Image (cartoon, rainbow, N blue to C red):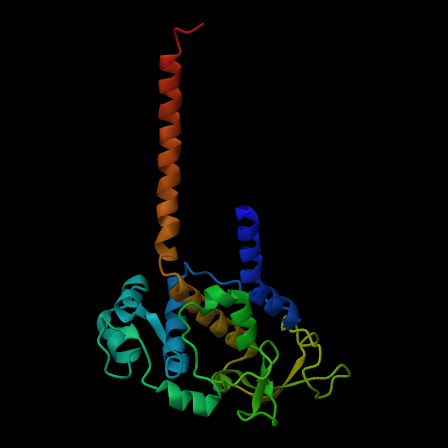
Length: 254
């Protein structure tokens, strides 16, 4: 009976995720991030702090931890990544009041500390590439991955503006398009205005941002891989010694 209850509880806990996963109906691109690439994380930190941190917090992450893990000098972080007079030991919070934010956007912007872990890197990567013009929305944009999203396209200066194509290649609504940016012919979007970055440069920038968000969701992963190597080496050496000890104990047993 206890086992049945446990299985039922697990099933119920997975229902929201299953509904989201099956209801989206959008092909997610592979983010192909490398959390071990410190330079990528540094570029991602710059993008996050300049474009995301004004509305979204990362309240479980400290500036000092980020500086240490990303090998950034404290004075560089203070001068270029901290804009509200915070101290280096403080967490990444925002000054925007939640009530006012809810009135402006319909809902207060969520904390992003665990978003990459909750949604997945591929989801965040595809989401940041899937904003398109929609005059019927208060922000003027919609998103193919997150329909009717209240968030504006904060990276529009980098990506430019794009609109959604219908099946015959003309502008249309979201419908049942699949997101596939690997080639222009397969993309459900068409470019309206160019951004500061080329499509390839924008893809790399979003990849850096997603890599940083994945790091923020689990900072220990940068050290976990290194510790894992030492653990495997220890087990290998211990295994050899254990085998030799076993042979010595059993040498007189016939």
